[in-house]
Length: 315
Image (spheres, one colour):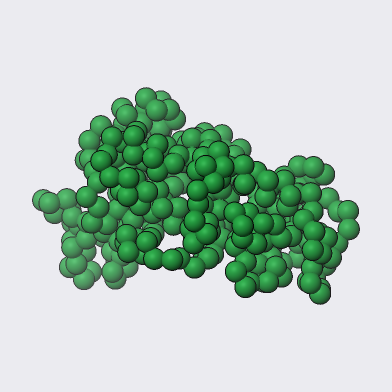
């Protein structure tokens, strides 16, 4: 049995039988060192009879789900946890129709919105950029950004960058290449008026050697673009609107960068951790035509902290 997160479908069902189980796990993920008021930042408070916390600093009353993507949800947390598991642990993810059938819910819009809320949490700021210490601390020197492209020739332990068309839109792609023909982590962003230089500057650590062929996708960029296109066709039958393509590409990047995680349960834990730290996402925000947002920070494998005994995750 897992300690911090379930490691199989059977463990998921065993751990999270009730909404109370889910709520306790979400509380553990959100406040691993104890309650911290999201309003005033004070550490410490009291649990009330209705399950909320009262802050010892400002006396505000906060539920575990308030201020997260689960805020004001009408969908049971048990269904949410199943959706998070299927979203995070299936190799190719899950479509809204398949999720609707798995959860046995009436509304396709509900399953569609659940998945888009999960995709929205992946585009978070921070984290390490590509290259730099992410390539093993190689101490590579930067080539600089010049002209219409980036310069560099035949190096190992570099980041390859270029443009490619995915879903009829021009995208910028940057890929770590720690060894020849070996792909590390990647970043993808719909350019939509943003230059390739600006994109690369925002996702690659300073001092990293960058390789590209101006106007042509280099090998690593071509491989990642082809993989993303196949994934969109395989999981979503290519029926992704241009307005929502950035969200789907964020999901692809999350999967690609986490493909070597030792446990698929780790991906489930990380999605819930991001969901607990993300502001609420309303349906009206999802239905509006979204603008391309920030690319997700590269996925970093790390173990969650242990806490007091109790349920398996508190052992």
